[in-house]
Length: 399
Image: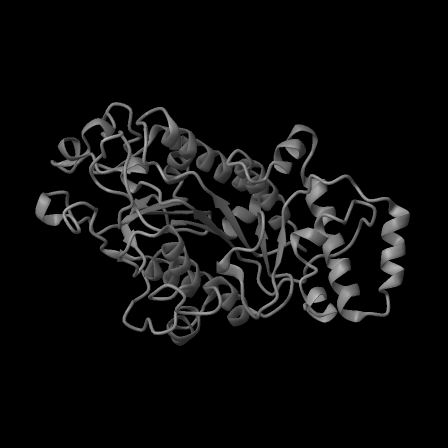
């Protein structure tokens, strides 16, 4: 049986946040240790990296991609070799402004094709599934400053990336009706002498106040359907608004699913195009809401694995290996495609079917954490990504 103490430990979860309302204004959420922001976007389902960033300059691209090859005329050709999908226009604008970097042919150490195991490796920062007990982003909180309000997950539940011994929070808009103010006051009085519950309950109220202030009208209705991919745009906007505040979180996670495109993936239009549009619009809203704080921000968008280089028999793609990581933010030294492109010859493909990985996702994250937060090489190799001393940080990503 779960003890009352164990129950109260988790009272900052979405369930308690749903109890809170806007009746206690003026509360302070955080006393941030750092002024620099980091947002990690988990693209769940295995995003097709060549659909998002087409290597149109590779002589084998069109023949290999067949029906899924994007027309060079429709691509946003930000680079002589690579072009962004036309649905990523906001990211192309960031690229032109020096605020976006794409890193193709990236992968975690995982080389199998299970979504569950691949996401586990991505989020824990391990070399194999269930190789660690906590997430690399939770460990980062401890390395930077183990305070309760540094990190916040926007979405249903807490992703494995943020789970661990360091205190973090999560928030998702509630579809439940608002609780009566008298009832909330009574609950507070009942537990006023329980330090653990009182602290967590007040924190839940703080977070809910910020959330409902940030969501208005139809956006509130849409956000209540927070398991829908459409809600990503609103959640990203809310994250930007919160993180722009002096008392807001400094680290956040967002999630966007729908990338498991086995059937009718589409090219310039269709399922993939729609998801890419949601992704780009969400990042654009995040930037707008952050305002001047965008210049202190890095956004890292990563997926558990890429997809097969060739289409399958249903005009989709199956689980693959290397994908594409996207970095956005005013703190970047952007306007570049950082790559070691492996080529698309038959002999160049991993296991004869996938883009061969040439850059480890851990190298990207290590480079950002070292240059953005000053995390030492020792902490990166032993705390953030244990046992990864051989993986060198990707340098020169941050201004």
